[in-house]
Image (tube, rainbow, N blue to C red; front, side, top):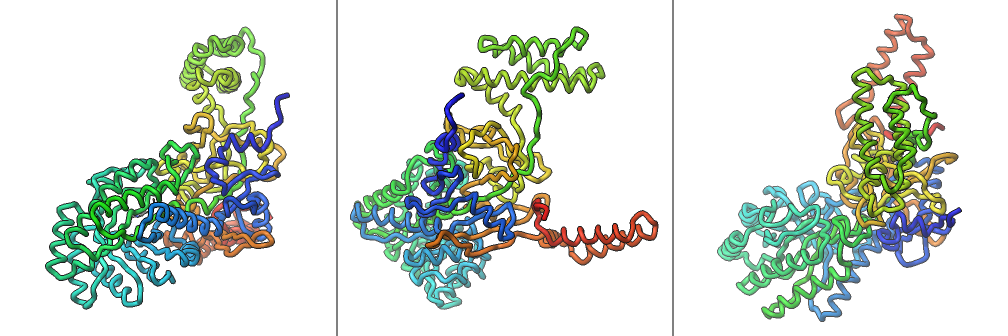
Length: 637
Ligand SMILES: *Cc1c(COP(=O)(O)O)cnc(C)c1O
């Protein structure tokens, strides 16, 4: 008997103490627990919470949002900048701005605004619809409203008029044409607008979204356009309206070096403009890009090689030295961190509905002399394989499997023999994996190949396309792990398949704490004897919900907002997921028409005698209940 499996082993296996950042840990019961205040002992047991929510009629899959984490993240970034500014003797202020495109969900934006009030947290919009949302929010009076994205005259005039509501709205010129529109609107409305310039940096970002930066990026003014823009403003007597210099080098920047280089270039735009007469400048907006650590490695595109404190220190110190060299006042530093503020706060929880169970660990039966040669060969490999000849046997196995397929297609191998060959291949692969494990370094390739081949598929009650679209679209990694049984050893390796009929509808990229890279399978517990088995996908708060689509007509999941109370926790909000009727209405089907059409079909069948009246009644009952129901699998009452 080996040593007993403990929660520490699970923590190591899933890497939760690294990516969890103190917000997520395994508790003494062997369940995942949320510590919303990071370093306090107050926890919410995620498994118990899930059961508790189900008792209240809330359905899996559930998006659970932890409000306290939002507050903690806002405080964290503000404290980091405050500390950096104090340590360096920086004379300006820090102002955060939340770009609502990262997650526009109404209650979430309200929570951000509420918790951000004391810190003057502002909002950023990147389109006309987003501007309309932002203007309706009760941000603090001195909080910034930053207007980015493509603009027309209506967008610009609305933003300008909002100044008269007491909003601190800054219109950022993303394309040169917009500057002309701003000047026209300023004359028409007799207003002195607050203007920002977005500069196109030559410094490239880094990471997965690197193409959104650099000289060919979609937005921003070139240095030629900036020089011309200043001249134009001067001619119009509006140069003092230029208050903000903006740049954004992309999202989830993994390297602090890329951030520093962009600051040096972006900071130079600021100091040059100020020196040459744009003395109305008082904000430098360094955009988003502050990363979060999805895999805990500190070295991949899904991670970052710096802390939030280092990020703040570097921004403050680079800008301070640039300004001091040029003897200009220290500007207010603005960041547009979205992912950093909201990624951690939500967790998707779903149940496993089944597993493809191949009995494959043992040989099916002894092979006899009159069996096909191919089966004899497989038997031979099974008996002889060892660590000395593993490579050779592996290659033989691959070849025999191809032969088996060909012989079947040509009508030589019967279905029964093909099935036996397959079962023997599984048994051999299982044995080979055990051998490869004894020397993981030498046999890494074989191990990875075989592990993926013989892994289980766990069928899960969720849609990748709706709830974690970046996992599918850009191969982003999210931490995934079971919520309970973490004091038992997970004996299975699995990929997670979703409910869509799409073969891409699965998660196949998992943290590998041993190699620091990725695994294609996740360690899971056997389902035997378990009435439910829950899995969590963590850090889904940024970008996922809003990019999610209705593939196969799976709609929004149920969502709840949970916050700590003295007695434990409370459910602040319940946002029911889409009903089938709602999802169908997005593609123009009307409930009443659908019902009427099916009813008429039952009427005709009753006339033809193929359907009884009772059957028709039952069919219509299921049909109507189905339309009112959840788009995901529901448990029988
Ligand atoms: C998307 C975007 C952001 C948010 O970036 P994060 O990496 O999520 O912080 C900030 N600013 C602009 C202009 C953006 O387009």
